[in-house]
Structures are given as structure tokens and as C-alpha cells.
Image (cartoon, rainbow, N blue to C red):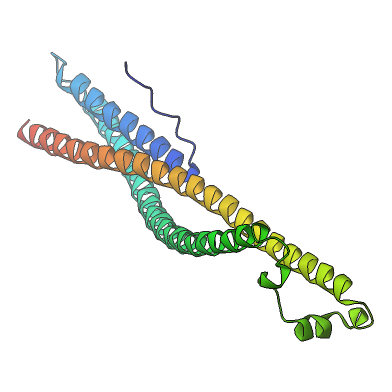
Length: 223
């Protein structure tokens, strides 16, 4: 079962394809004029020959203009591809950095969860919780200095919970950012692949057109 290629939506690529279509149409018009010219049985008047030569010259100038435009657009598209590839490489490095950060965060998360589980399974041993020292906590929350040990301990536990919850929120944000970057990078990579294919097709077609013009020129010169 064959799958259809997704439509091309990149404005630079669409401009290249449009210019290529115009150049192709123009390149086909010139051989038609030459065919009509050589298909005559009776030689035309000199005035008619001059008009036809002028018309052919005009068509050739139009073709050269289309080819010049196509070359410019192609050069711009190639530069765009290089820029996109550089951006993709930069995004890939960012993703790798995020992946490393997420790995470290996951390790820290597992470590924290292990500590929490150990603390939860250690009955009435709240002093074993990995919390900030009492003096450091009281420096951060001086209003707790007049409270009893029980209230201070509960406040310390709540402070630790809030801190760990903040770490979890940071981890989730990093995961979402990584997923968005991976999706964006995949879309860029797919668009670059389509652009490379279209550029290669155009380059092959340009060589064919050049050879055809050389053959036509030799035919006209021989006539």
C-alpha cells in the first residue's frame, strides 16, 4: 500500500517550484517554435523570418530571465536549508542537554522518593527525614521561633514537601519542553528531507534542459 507524500507548504520551496515550472514551460515553448520553423515546406519571406527570429530571441530572453530567477531562488532555498540544518543541530544539542538534565533529575527524583519511602516506613522516626537543620529553618522562618518542637517539626515537614513538589513541577515542565522540541525537530527534519529531494530533482532537470538547448543550437547552426 503506497502512501502519498504530504503537501509542500514551505514558502521558499514553493517559490522554487513555481519558478521551475515557469522555466520548464518557457523551455518547452522554444522547441515548439523551432519545430514550426523547420517544418515549413516553402521558405518564408525575409520579413517573416526576421519576425520569427525576433520572437525566438524574445522567448530565449524570457527563458534566461526565468532561469536567473530560479537560480536566485534556489540559492536562497539552499541557504535556508543550511540555516534550518544548523538550527536543527542546535535544537538537537538542546534536546541532548535536556535529556541529560532529565536523567539527572530522574536520578534525583528516585533518590528523593527512596528517602521519602524510607521515612514513611520508619515509624515515629521523623528525625530521620532529610530536612534542613532546625537553625537554618528558623532563619528562613523566624516567626516559628516561639513555637513548640511539634509545630516546628510539622512546619519543617511541610517545607520539605513544598520544596520537593517544586522539583516535581520543574521535572514535568522539562518533560513537556523536551516533547515539544522533539516534535518540532522531527517536523523540520521531514521538511528538510522533502526540500533535498526537490532540489535534486530540479538540478537533474536543469542539466537536461541545458543539453537540449545545446542540441537545438547545433541543429539551428547546421541548418
